[in-house]
Image 1 (cartoon, helix red, strand yellow):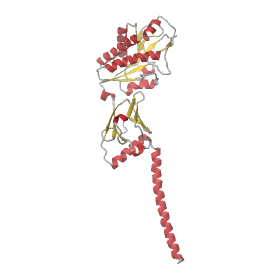
Image 2: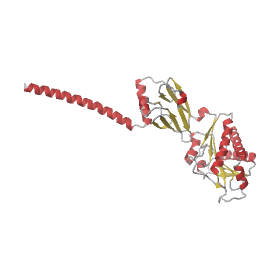
Image 3: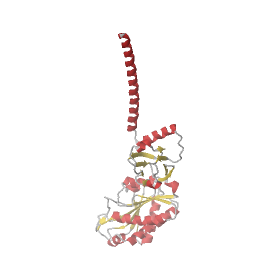
Image 4: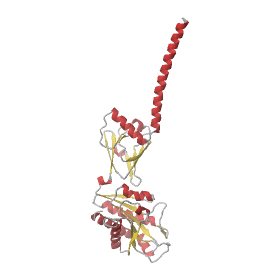
Length: 342
C-alpha cells in the first residue's frame, strides 16, 4: 500500500514539476519578448509592428505612415510641426500616454527616417533630408507622407540671415549685425511670400536664434536647392569707423566659375542690389574661406550689404525703408537667377 502511495505521489510530483517548467518556460519567453521590446529603438519598433500587422491583417494604405487616433479626435487637434533646419518633424497627439503607442502602434515604412522617438503624446521624426509633410485624417487614422521639395515646387532656394542668438556679428553703437541681417531677410520673406511663382523657400532662421554653421550650410544640400543666398553686414578689419562703404558679394572661387556657378550668382546679386540701392559696387570677393560657402552644395552667394563702420551707411542699414530696398534688390536677383536657369 505504501509503495502504491509513493508511486502515485511520485507521478503527481512529476506532473507538477513538468507543468511548472512549462509555465516558467512561457513566462521566460514573454519576459524575453518584453526585454527585446525594451531594447528596441522606436524606429525598430516601427518595423516590428508593421511586419506583425502585415502578417495578422491586411494593411493596404498607400501613405508612408499610419497611426490610429483616439476616438472622435478631429484633424485640427493633431499638431504637426516641421523644423526644416534640423529636418525634425514633430507630431503632437493631445491626451495620450506613451503606452498608447504600444496598443495603437505607428505603422508604415521607415524610408527617409533617420530616427524616431515617441513619448507622452509626441512623435518626433528625424528625416534624412528636407521634406514637406502631407497629412490627412480618415476613418479614425492619421496618414502621413513626406514629399521632397522638388515634388512640391518648381524651384527651391535657401535664404540665410547671418549670425543670430549668441553670435551677434559686428556691433556698432549698440547696433548688432544679426538684427540688421534678420530685418532684411524678413522684408525679403514678405516679397517671396507674395510671389506667384511656385518657389519653395527655406530659411536658416526667421527669429533671433543661431543655427550651427553645419546646419546652415547643409540646408542647401538637404533641400537640393537651386541657389543659396546669405545676408550679412560688413565692417572694417579693425572695427574702426571709416569712410569705406559699399556692397560686395562673396562666392566660392574653388568651384567651377562658368555657367550657373556660385560666381555668376554672386555677380547677379551684386548688380541687382547696388543697382537698386545706389550702394557703391565693391565687386566680388573670394569666399571659400567662409564655412557656409565652402561646404555648400548649392550655388551660393554671401552678400555684404553695407558697412556698419561707415556712419552714413550704418544709418541706412538700420532704416526700415533702406532695408526694404536691399530686400527688393535681393528679390530681383533671385528672380533673375531663376530666369537664367538656376
